[in-house]
Length: 146
Image (cartoon, rainbow, N blue to C red; front, side, top):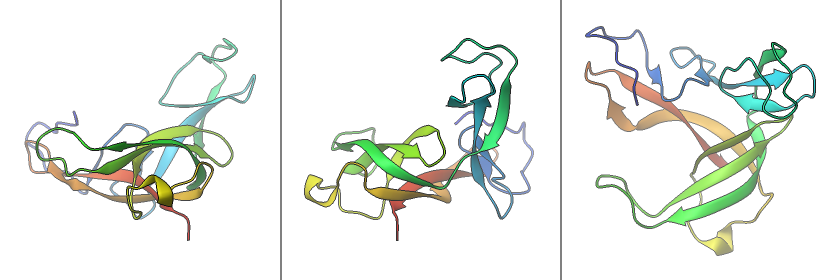
């Protein structure tokens, strides 16, 4: 997490990634950029489409909070301080966009997981992590859809 505020406390949590918008408000969301030429959607700002090569046709788009589990990996070994096991997931969002994140709210056991299972994006504190100035971070996670 590289959001350093140079000794200034933020008015709210900082986004854990640049494509998480509204972290300090009541309505956070994931932002993608859609190509006006081919409709491909990417995370992060860009001026050129990686799919069709169109230039200067990328438009910011609020991504859906609903999606389907495309792929996952259950992680049993990680860095010190990271609780394992956890589920690292790739989710295809409704309306476009593919996002990697952690799947929470379900047992990390293949018998409880299925490809294409409906999931939703939720926003929560980034596991208590703080920057050098004591600012907290807001992150996104996936959980099984209700």
